[in-house]
Amino acid sequence: MGYEHGKNFSLAEKGKKIIGFHGYAEKNLISLGPYFTTISISKSECCGDIGDCYWDDGVYESIKRFVQCQHEYVDYMIFVLAYYLKNLILLQFELYYPDEFITAVDGTFKGAPLIKRILSLVFKTSKGRISPTFGSISGTRLVLEKKGYARVGFHGWTIFYSLSAIGGYFSLLPLHPTVEQLEARGYDRGATWNN
Image: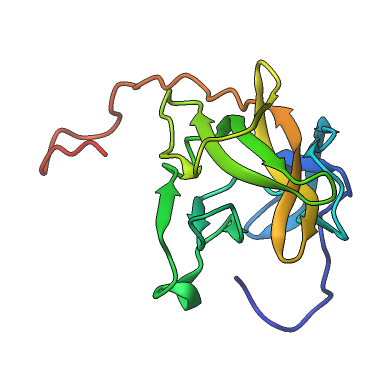
């Protein structure tokens, strides 16, 4: 936005998000500064068993879609759109982004003494929806939930390319501001509209 010449700048601070702006303007914008708030993120322990490869997808603002690409056990779980795996997709669950969040993950895991795998996962949302079961329910139950918090990222372990443990990152559920409709100002000409 604007012109490509002049001095570049960035308004960012690690671990914080922008909640507003302040500055000075006359005919054009003279100065701009952000108001920040701290993002409170907590990391849960993994449920399941340690595998041979640790993975961590990090923290995101929200998760849009879950896709499972294997049926016998949870082999690949892709937490965003997997357009290049269209022919392999067996089951998917899409969230009403950006207004719906994962609040809990239920599942099961079991296996031989040396190789334990996640066998099923079910996702619960802030809108009260429950995903289809990814995988087949069998074995020891696992629950990843923190009341009043949304799941904003995942980490875990794999073994022989299968999910063997899953944990995640939690953030306070966002509070949506209440909407107030104000009386229209100006002239009463033209067509009425409301979006």
